[in-house]
Length: 84
Figure (tube, rainbow, N blue to C red):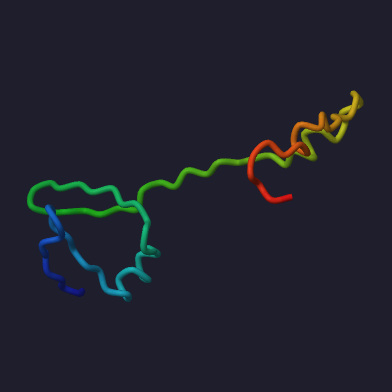
């Protein structure tokens, strides 16, 4: 068991965790933690990560039989000071 010190951190307080503690808990810098306190015990639990599944657009349109999109020329016309 490691010990650490509660320290002032800006307008709040912070606790530093050792590298060993982070590795044993499977945590990484930037991970979100759920914090609870009850009967003098503070518990930190990794927040559940949300995964967003983005489908491959090529798979979405693999059976598409309609007309192919055409370039309307808008993107090719310089309108400001951009380099060509």
